[in-house]
Length: 140
Image (cartoon, rainbow, N blue to C red; front, top):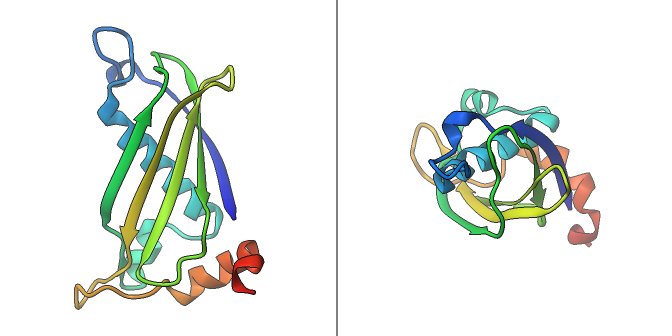
């Protein structure tokens, strides 16, 4: 299993009239978690695109348990529970407030797509090499 933690300060523009983070903004928080997760592995979406790989989101789900508010410092925990073996990767997200209360959970599924053909492809070898040590038990 691979985990990454990042924090984000809730901006005023991300809240509604009730001073609660608008639910649609969690897609962006999940994206921040994913982007920083792969950055820690030495990749960026830009680098993936330079390698000829695109990663479109094909599914997203979220469960809202508690609200986040303006100026809260939220923690986004992003987890890869399994080493991708086909053309898709699943990121699991948990969002916490400063009191370590779980606010939101979610899952985002992306496909690996060849930029030139538009066809699904497997996990790029460079990314597989970086992730494999975290999933030794899965390979056995």
